[in-house]
Image (tube, rainbow, N blue to C red; front, side):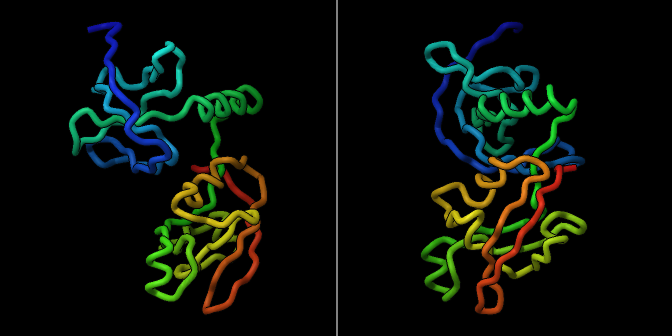
Length: 189
C-alpha cells in the first residue's frame, strides 16, 4: 500500500494532545496541532497533510487510539521554523517553561473567585519555571502582557512562539496578590 492518499476534513485547530508510544514508555505534550479525520495508520503516519490545492499544511504525527480516523498533524509553519533552527544550530529545540497546568476558564474563575489563567499543578524541577520561583498553586494570568485565556490557546500558544533562551515576563496571582516573574526559557529535554 505504498503511495496511499486518504481524504478527510480538518475537524479542529489549536488542539493540545499528549502523544506517546502504545507501550507507555514515552510521551510528550503537543500543542496547537491540527485535528483531521483523514486515515492515519501505522506505516503511513509522518507524511504530509495536504489541502485541496495540494499544498502541505502539516505533518501527520499522531493518531488517537480511542477514536477511529482521528489524527493529528503539526502545522507546517511550526515545521518550517524547526527546520530553520536546525539549519542554524544543528539541533531541534523547543522552548520549555516547565509547568504542568490546567486552564481556568472565565466561568471557573468566577465560580472560585480567582483570576482567569493557568493554574500550575506541578513545577518541573530545575526547569525555567523552577529557577524563576514559580510554585504549585500559582495562577499565571499574563505572559508578555498577553492575557492567558482558553480561547487564545492558553500558555502553550505563547511559549510556542518563543525560542530557547528567550525571556518571558509573567504576571502571577499568588495568595491573593499579583506579582511579576521573569523566566528564561530552556530547551525541552
